[in-house]
Image (cartoon, rainbow, N blue to C red; front, side, top):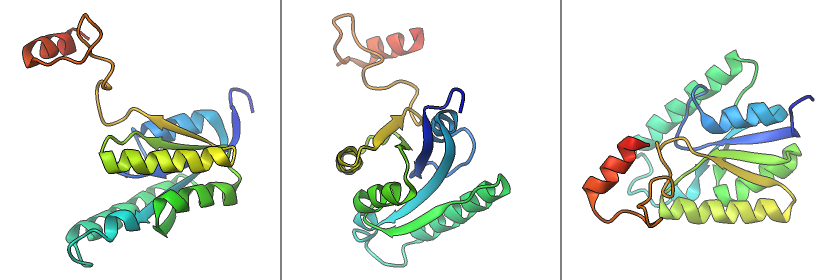
Length: 164
């Protein structure tokens, strides 16, 4: 297990449903001998939709099927659950005996709350929750003013962004 820090890890696929150029998957593959992949049709999101036959769910279902096929072609597969992600992911992590759960960072307020609950539930079970920067070029704290604060004027922010 040279270079590997875990025996088993779980990658929680969310917004980015690709098996390539996926930061969390890359980190998990570099850290664990065995990597499981999962997607949860999250009731917290689904129950809030205006109609049960929302076309967005069909698109996501098709994307999940494509991801599963791509992972199977590489010798793996995708574990798919329907339920509350804040319960399903910790439960799955325990059932699989993983030491870490990896996911790409999400910035939506509701997602941040969900991720905090998942991280706490995992920590209570001795499992680490690791998020990776994936959908942004710079994190919130990577482009700051000379005073170390977020910019309040766009042009200085743009110039600092371009310098980085």
